[in-house]
Length: 574
Ligand code: NOJ
Ligand code: NOJ
Image (cartoon, rainbow, N blue to C red; front, side, top):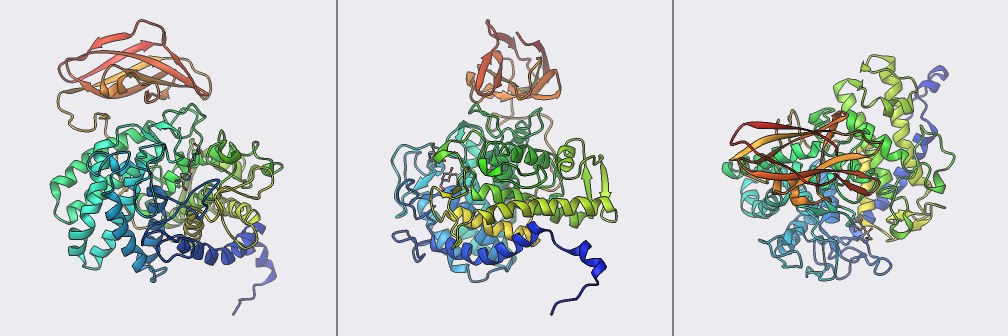
């Protein structure tokens, strides 16, 4: 039965055009996405012939591109979505899929591959053949987000089973699988990795963020099953990861996606990090880059705007309306097009934000997030707006419409039949690259859930604080001193200052992995790093701008660390 509204109310409650489009599209697309997703899971999925049980194929496309492989990242994200749907009671028919996934990952973890064996780095291998044998061709390896994402999905599953009093299955069957992945993260988080797009070998925000989540919730699970010393090791490295996570923020007000790669750093990497580390208990915390945090919103608008002028299909669209977005603006893969899953991620972040504002009953505009809100509500002032205020109502309605307008973009460029490929053409919106991308279908389903107010279970992000010094040595902490590097350097917009030098903690003279300094006190750039005590150290600052690296002039800078305590270097760019 429908309620008839008095005419004077209709204007106030009537949905916008984007909202109507999103409603209609999602109603017809979600069953297609669910069917498409399940078709890509072996062994009985309609499009997964040859895949073992629980193995997710990235896409049935077997040439141009050949995606008939199983990627650890794609599989883990797909199963995170399935596990969330099952454990939140949205679809209780998925139990055997989850059991198959567990069994398949237990096997695949043990398969020796070009990245190593299970105990020597093999868990960082990005993809396998769908019959669970190693893929031995050339590839961007290792990719260290995979084990973390798989641990996150399996920990969600383990926590659910513990709540159902099935602790013995968790301790005996799940924990050994999860622990292998967590131990991998704890040992290798500080080493360079290919990013989630398999192109840049450096440190990567998405990877650091999901690694941080994995060790944080891994420590809680270890504690729950009585593994307290394992838990404390994970907690130590989680603190280091949280520290490192902060260093990607740059002076221009967005997260630089990768420490290497020589690009603008504006990248869906960061939006995906926010939605895949969403913790509704953490409020709008910026330290963990929560979807409604000021940093994540400022970052989002910067990311979105990077695509407004580069794709033909975005021309003429007003700045308060959603557009097609891709991996990163410099992308050239398959012509460098928008992706369905990245455009959906923008909407998902905004729906997550709306859920938290609603739950908190308030929304804040800070100096950092003002550019985001001003794009939707010109002239908006900094302030906290409780839900009783008209500003709260106006802003949340604008955010909802903005989110729905990204769904409308995806709707417009979904072909008849509803199949979601990887990309859609920047010039005319037609599907491009791998057909029926499993990850695209998962993204559609998680975005729809977020829009309906579904929130994941908390993973422990609430109330975390960043340690005052950052340990990048991957362990220990004994015999180190906290050294603050300060350098006065004038830079142009988009340019950043980094440091590298002669010891591990200074990434051994690697310009690609050099450590980014904070511009919080510009023109003084600074970073605090734990360095070995009583050691003679050489270093230099470098600048990176649009891919170009500039070293300071010779000779190297040199100093000896004290035996204990802390130390500050006051330098000036040379
Ligand atoms: C295949 C990878 O999957 C894709 O992410 C990348 O852009 C291309 N290779 C080009 O490196
Ligand atoms: C290329 C994407 O860049 C990468 O993230 C993904 O894992 C593979 N395709 C498989 O879908």
